[in-house]
Image 1: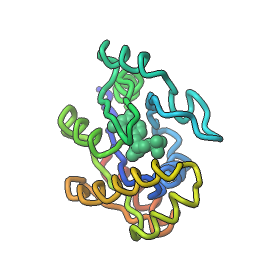
Image 2 (image 1 turned 90 degrees about the vertical axis):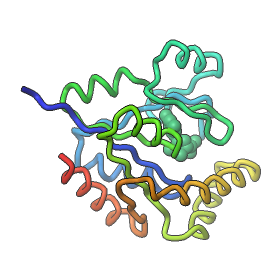
Image 3 (image 1 turned 90 degrees about the horizontal axis):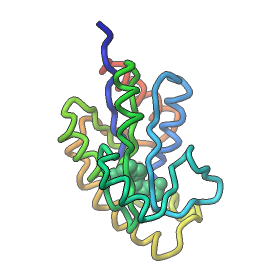
Image 4 (image 1 turned 180 degrees about the vertical axis):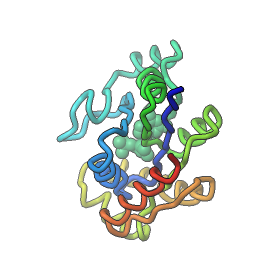
Amino acid sequence: MSHSGRLYVISGPSGAGKGTVIRQVLKKHPDIMLSVSATTRPLRPGERNGIDYQFVSVPEFIGMRDRGEFLESAEVYGNYYGTPRGPVDSALRAGRDVLLELDIQGAASVKRAKPDAVLVFIEPPSLDDLHDRIRGRGTEDPDALFKRLEAAYEEVRSKGTYDHIVVNDEVERAADELARIIESSR
Ligand code: 5GP
């Protein structure tokens, strides 16, 4: 009998460097699938539709949600985000591990729906550091920056509900730690 893959949820405040850590892990483990979420947030410079996200309008998103196409969905910083169910289920059935990068609401819904999902929280070494990283990225206007910082405090307070906490003090080291967590849960 073939075994099914495992689901990993990666969360952490905006600017904690989740994306970079995940990319490093995928380089070492190209067999792992990173789920592409649908979002109503505007595309940032450098992002590609269908690769970073599936960028959709609000009516499109609501249609997808109402048809039950999402494994989970949530409103984050005033935009909608959702995990398409189909690709995740087929990868798991094919025995592939799947990474979902979700906010804390998404992580909690996935844990309810799939209790054997492994939840990993990636945190920045400090909140000052986080502030500098989000500002440095220069992609958010002051209002969005404030919302993201406020949410960061909230997210860091919820880290106790995660199975593992990885401090992103150094990308290579954090990626190795995340890779070890995945290898040891297999
Ligand atoms: P960003 O706009 O910076 O790409 O993502 C904002 C937040 O939404 C991040 O915390 C990210 O992990 C989260 N996020 C991205 N996709 C999804 C999703 O499909 N569902 C949920 N619940 N959160 C998501």
